[in-house]
Image (cartoon, rainbow, N blue to C red):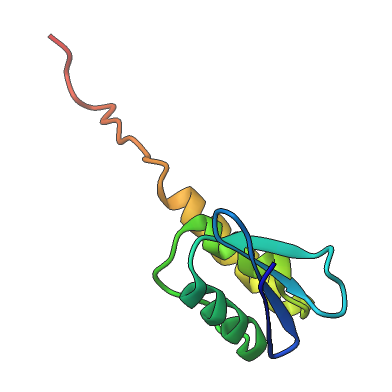
Length: 99
């Protein structure tokens, strides 16, 4: 198994992609398909940067491997906003006459 050490994290090659884990606790980990987003995820977590354009799974991965509780809370809030944004609210006009 190929292992890359990067800024206090391990990036392990798996059959279907890459597994990112902390060097201090390898039980805390996440899986990604490509290597480039793996490096970016680690950089974001270290610099406490919240990615703007990304999917829900990528945000969950940030939450999983992050150390700082305040940063985790901000990520979770952003995740919740993205989840609720997909839900449509329907407008009902109560004054509209029905024929």
